[in-house]
Length: 199
Length: 199
Picture 1 (cartoon, rainbow over the protein chains, first blue to last red):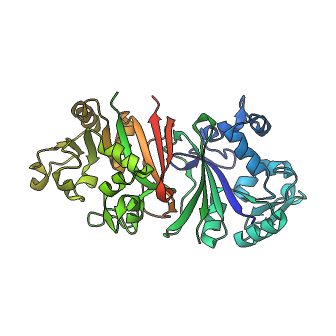
Picture 2 (tube, helix red, strand yellow):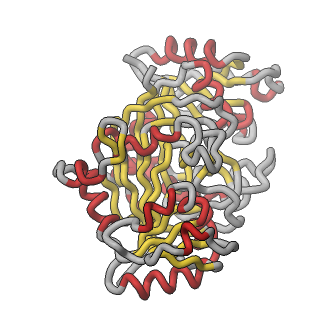
Picture 3 (cartoon, rainbow over the protein chains, first blue to last red):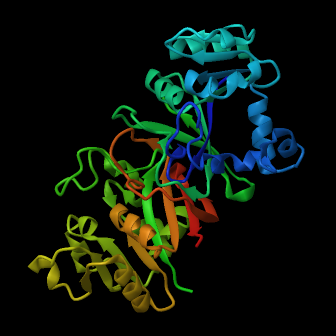
């Protein structure tokens, strides 16, 4: 069955961005360190990783095979809306309390949705048999609270950040049990940890 | 060479204790969940795990083979000073800015030390060829800042806590690179992640 899966790169101490993050500094100071495993010569280069017959490539293949994307406005807009296509022309649902600016409203694959349950339901419908790629800390928090996040895939980077923006911040005081479903030791010390949320 | 190794059980979202922790509630509300992998029938039972020929038993064997213990007063005193013996009669160094209460001062294996560098140096001397078991978030933070923590072994528990006391809190804004040295998939969904601090 199709699942909504959060894919996030995180430092061992739980940060997904460095300090001083903002609209013009989405990854925060030094935050690029968390995405080095996806880069070649300073640029994001997913195709090179996919060709490399590596564990990291297997993970990239997996998230590039998803059938829809859900992300928050704060992830999507600073990234320029991924040029209107995250991968392979799959539908993109953006969680936002606001109407999109014109630049994003005209993107044919993109739909703005104002609640997380609707976003996840529509993304699953659009994805069919495929999984849904979920991105962003705020979206993860809302989806966990609403019980509509099925799985987590954390790419744990071998670094401590000390300061920055945390993935898990502001969750309710509630223990959510997880089932560990896969641990993969990727190249460059990146450990891919996959869990299913127990409900 | 002998290493100082932080051993801590942590939820996937980074908590080492539940909310409302305090001197009479050292693990916080629900914090026992993080230590279930060390328990039998509701009681801490390290010997049963060691006899069980399991991955978790291997980890227990490892930390019970250390030659000295370093912990903070906030870990040590609420635990009744471990009855004066953490394991096998190895020396115990307690990091504290205060003099010990009489009950702890009279324990022959226990030495109170007021700075982390001295605590680690003396523990390594006492441990000889063996590693040093380090416990406690405050001690970890001070040791990382002072550059005297050599390794981390995190037992990552398949649960989200949402709220509570974090392991990594209040560290300086500084990226500390780690070398992943071992990942073990323990029983009960516990993942043992071992890293060496790069300096």
